[in-house]
Length: 176
Image (cartoon, rainbow, N blue to C red):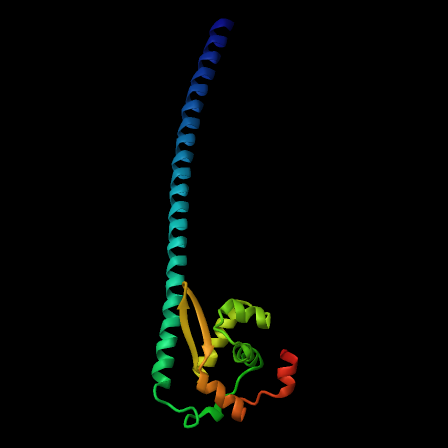
């Protein structure tokens, strides 16, 4: 009788072990399926991120071109003395950007200007956009896939003669 009970107990233990093995195998397969789904989602997210980065760069370049076209159209044939330039008010940071461009004898990149005023290129882009919206004629060109810009020559001359932006000598000395 003991042998029968022991034999029956061993048989039940083997059955439980077999069922447990099957259950663990099913769980393992399910985890593999989840892992594969996660990997596929990760690849999709990475591909979408790369696509969005490329799209962002294209939008930036397009925005710069639109700004240049808008400025060209706005200032086409307009004499600065006739424009309402006395209404242009620049913030201190915009004045710093203006001074970097005003004192430069070459076309500048965003990086050149940002290092001149110790601000990020992102902030410099914003200041330049604001200046353009306020009526400062900044000419932009692409040279080797990089934006280069300078102040319109007539505008620069008019500023030198009249100082309509109100940039004091103290500001110029502090800048230099």
